[in-house]
Amino acid sequence: LHPGGRLSTEAVAGRPQPESFTQPAPYEDPTVYCLSYRTAAFEADSELTGPVALYLDAAIDKDDTNWMADLVLVEPDGKRQLLSQGWLKAAHRALDERKSKFYDPIHPRQDPVPVRPGEVVRYAIALMPTACVFRRGSALELVIRNQDDLLSRLGTWGVYMLPFMQTVTHKIHFGESHLLVPHIPAAAQKELRI
Image 1 (cartoon, one colour):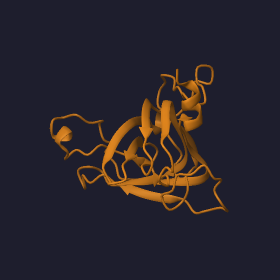
Image 2 (cartoon, one colour; image 1 turned 90 degrees about the horizontal axis):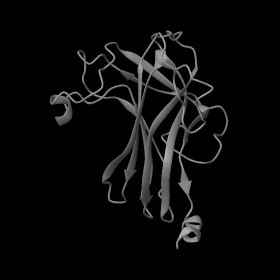
Image 3 (cartoon, one colour; image 1 turned 60 degrees about the vertical axis):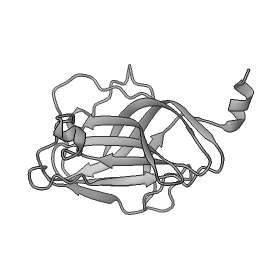
């Protein structure tokens, strides 16, 4: 993750300031606030197939929050398609080191452990595995948010994750925050064809 909404395989330059968004409690403002990070347009067809994980270094100003991540295909004409999602309650951030793999973080069942407000914490968020070919000119976007859109069609039907009922400011820190995706280069695709 890079400041200014970029997703790139390059290392983050310097020591950029964190980026933040504040999600009001839904009874105060139901608008969904978020931060988005997008790749440059793919220069050739590219395949992403397999597990996805987000490692986020972040601080919050409360002792808990919901972390939600969406993986989105953005077509050259601007059309968007949701590919995968992941969720993590901050107070359930502990990892099961024995069962977890770098591409599949697993969190044990446990009592919640409050987050110290303002402390930068590493969150490991598993997203659902995906399989998609990104055509030349399309891009991959990661959306980080705190709640579902309660005013959407699904929201009015009662299909949503329970919102966190407090106003929370989320600060994303750069340098080690990254999205792990299963990229299969075009050359490998040609080699595997039978």
